[in-house]
Length: 619
Image 1 (tube, one colour):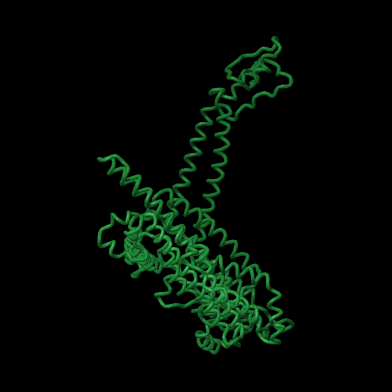
Image 2 (tube, one colour):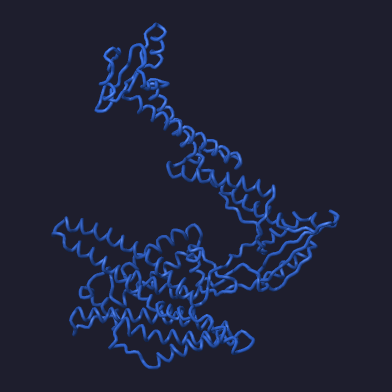
């Protein structure tokens, strides 16, 4: 459920601003209103925060390259550690740039062999001038025979040579290197060793990442404090000793008493009221443990319901579990997910003493997948006829192939029943959305508009069965047409009945005829979109069946055993990974778009984040 919020305004003497904020932070219940503010203190903290984040990123990259021995690393102050990491990173960057330049130079002079550039200068002082050139062959062939030239080497396009005496007019001499080939090679080796030493040092320092993480947490709190301090408004034209400051925010309604007691203790002036219509209170969702296990999905998606929207955690959990099972579709895969979840669950429990919410969610999802796979006879995509008798007995009649029919016809009827179930699930979820809307709208007349839309969804369900499944088996009943037309008409009559003239409100509603009509058409497609549960599940089954066929088609013997095992392992592993991705794409979509769309949700909420002292993890 979404916890009710209260809006608060806190007024203190300006001279007590910092002390009051410290006390408020220790209290840890007020979500401060965010404002775009700036101050010297905030700028300074943000600069330190950027440096800490950069240093932390450097050490995280270094930690993946080499195991570190934490026993030989001496602890240091976080600020000094950050500066040392940044210094080493800058030095490494400089060495890498110089190394790249040296390697480029080495490639440039490689064809000239190993010679000492200074020797040419010594010869010039003795009266012998040697000028190196890299001449295109066409230029070399056209040279005046009088030019004294010594050819050192040549290839398909260039002639490397030295000219004795005067330079060749119009041609650029070869630029002499700073060092010889061997000396440059030695410098490259030294630079590589320097870079390796820096990387080793960074790898050793990575054992102290926790110090920077702790410092970064402190800087985040300090930035929040400086932002809160800068956002407090101060009375103008008031003597400093009488100036007052104030700040606004939100608290859960059940925390109001705690804030009142603190205000009395510290001498704060306090105003607590209900949020106004234009306010944007933060959203705090509290649910029992058995519902809270769905929260990791919302955290992964980064979605927060608006304060005035719905908390759909329970319905999301129920429908998502079903969607997950139908998309994965295989009881064998469900068993694998269950075993992996138990393994990681018990492993994590040794550290925390309990199963994480994400593990509990996977246990639920895998269990539902096993049940779904069992009732439709899908175990690693094995043929139904090859299943043991006890597994066949678990298959319910609508999903059991009829032995009296031809195999293709029997399979078609089973698939039709699964498609029918998909449309039933979709209709139930959308109807549930409009029932929630009706409850929320009561006692307003707009509740009848939602009732009309509910009627239209039910009527469209029969139309979908007729158009998508089988016109003969699912004729459209006459009352379905009345439900669609009557529901749409009811919506137009009551959609804007929020007070005022009844007839004027109807005309106002009909002014939006086109968007409303398009939404009605969209409801039809929303129901049809639930067939994706069948389609994606069928695709996964077909892929798994193909890998089974590849393994079964191998020649008998040890090769069949080994190669078949590899094909099944990698094939089913890949299929399971693709199915999991499909759950994210399709299973989440049906809840976040189709279902939430009918609820009118925009997921525009701001997560409740109180101004508080965060707990620091100890190393």
